Length: 131
Image 1 (cartoon, rainbow, N blue to C red):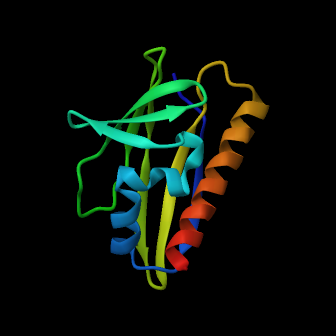
Image 2 (image 1 turned 90 degrees about the horizontal axis):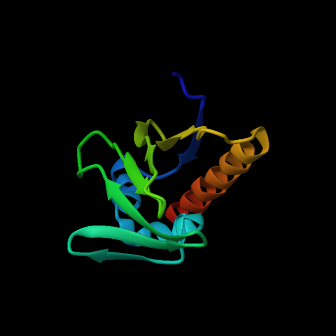
Image 3 (image 1 turned 60 degrees about the horizontal axis):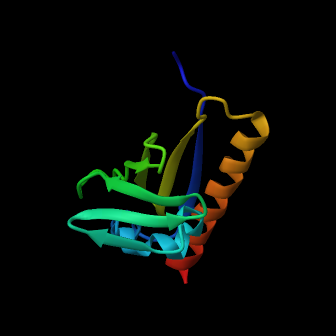
C-alpha cells in the first residue's frame, strides 16, 4: 500500500553543517518545533517529549555526514510514526527537506493542517539560525 507524501522544504542561509548540528540536537526541538512538545528530556538514553496528547518517545538517526535527520515518534497508543528529514547543502546555505506522510484515516483538512504546522516549524528553524 502506498502512502501519500508531501515534500516540504525551507532554504536557510547558513552552512548545512551548522543547520544539521542545531536541528539534530533533540534539546533544541522545543525552540523550533514547539508542536512536538513543550519540552524534551533524555531518560536512560531515550528521548521523550510532553505533548498535548501525552508523552511521546523520540528516536533519531545516529549523527552522520549526510545530513539525515530521520526520526521516529512513538505515540502513547503505541503507534510509531516515521519522519524522513534531511539537511541538504546548497551553494548559498542549505535546504531542510521534511517528508510529511499522510497517516491512515487522516482527512484532507488534517493532512493540510499537519503540512501548515511543519512549514511553521521550518520557518522558525530558519529564523533561529539566520539571526
